[in-house]
Image 1 (cartoon, helix red, strand yellow):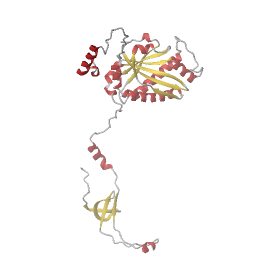
Image 2 (cartoon, one colour; image 1 turned 30 degrees about the vertical axis):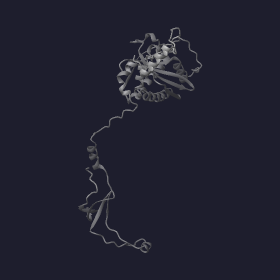
Image 3 (cartoon, helix red, strand yellow; image 1 turned 90 degrees about the horizontal axis):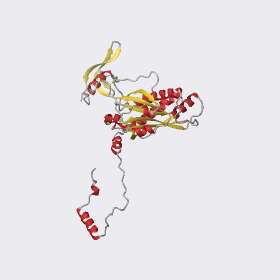
Image 4 (cartoon, one colour; image 1 turned 180 degrees about the vertical axis):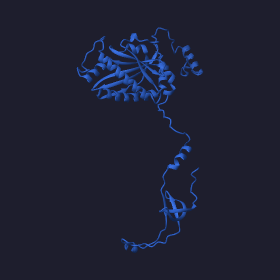
Length: 332
């Protein structure tokens, strides 16, 4: 533990301090006063590492939107899902804070090496059953600690957990391609096979609001699972999928050029008439024009070549006699 540079006295300050002590102006501490300890947060390193993964916030918010859409499709009811801030807590503290009854779904998300835990409370499962099948309002139903969950509630848990994992994969796809799998379900945290209960875990909390009633779904991920993919989560920018086809743009453009359609026109001749002659025009009037032998052809309005007009296979045509120099080089 290094001493802060602000705590180091200069030579002049040290001399002034020693002079004050010698003259009695500054009494020495006799040890009788109360001492106060300053707490040290040992989680500082972990919190700083979590701050280095701003991509977690992006995928978390995207996951909340997908989860709300998925629950609406499943239960045909309006629901809002809000993603809370990702926190770092001790895994043991999280497990002890799980309300009773709840179902803890053990989840495996490859390539994350290890198990994570999806916690769905019994209150939420009971509410969904009542809303979907009808019955006592979930906000009025009273549960007592230790009450077993019904088979229907367990089935709802399985359906909800499966939809959670599907939306999880979709939300994380821009950062990491996850393959999520529901391994098992426990109702007692003591039955979980934990490697180390004192390790740090990231908690992804989603608050659900349905018909004015709120509850949460919590995904608990041991920090050791996130550490190997920390670099991929270090940016909030999403990954742009690679374009299909050749990366050689010149070859690609040259290959497409022959199929582009262009408008070709030819100006045969022009003449000058007075306004009086124009006002005197009527159906059947003839405007005399001297037709030149050579005409100028245009491609998309730009002069391209000159030639002699005539007919070919019953169609009017122009025989090219000279190609005009282009104003730019398409090969540049």
